[in-house]
Image (cartoon, rainbow, N blue to C red; front, side, top):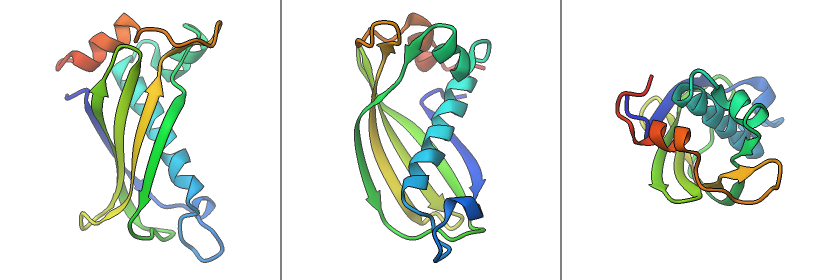
Length: 141
């Protein structure tokens, strides 16, 4: 497994769409947050995203978000949601996220910068060693 890339299939649901039957744009951010949580669950299988936040009291808030909407997605469409780690800094991660159709057509893409924080002090902290090791290892479960 390459810890710098994660993707999964998704079917666009009624609850993600507006009355026109197309994805209501903020729902893409919910889909991508769900993808991020699943990625962290895979990177840290013994802890998962819930343990990272709840047990370790560390956060991954978004500090920058750039989005490009290229084509619509309709209720029932099969798409692939993907995440690629573009940059691993001292206290931040830069991700490239995308939603593509079954024909490889780009529907929407996001560049997101997350910062690692203490949920006790709400200050930026260095990326925790366990997360950094998981992100730099090719043998992560």
